[in-house]
Length: 75
Image 1 (cartoon, rainbow, N blue to C red):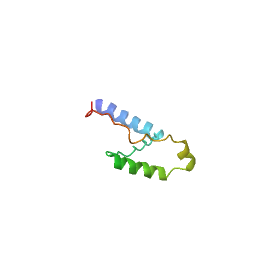
Image 2 (image 1 turned 30 degrees about the vertical axis):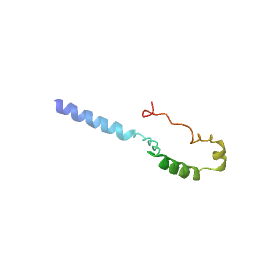
Image 3 (image 1 turned 60 degrees about the horizontal axis):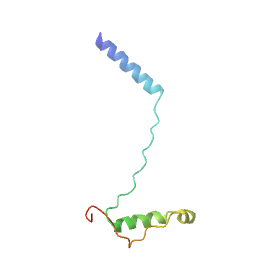
Image 4 (image 1 turned 180 degrees about the horizontal axis):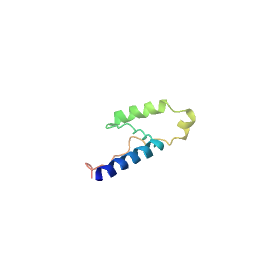
C-alpha cells in the first residue's frame, strides 16, 4: 500500500512539474579576480576599453597610487 501511495505521489509531482515549468534565472557572472596590482590594472584597462565616453566621464577618479597602503602586515 505504501508503494502505491509513493508512486501516485511521484506521478502527481511529475504532472505538476510538467504543467508549470520554472524559468531559471541565470546567476550574474562574477568579476575577474586580480591578485596583483598589475593584473588589476590590466583588467581595468580592458574594462575601460569597452565603455562609452559618457560612462568614462561619469566614473569617479581613481585613488592616487602614491598613497600609503595599510594592511595586516603594516599594522
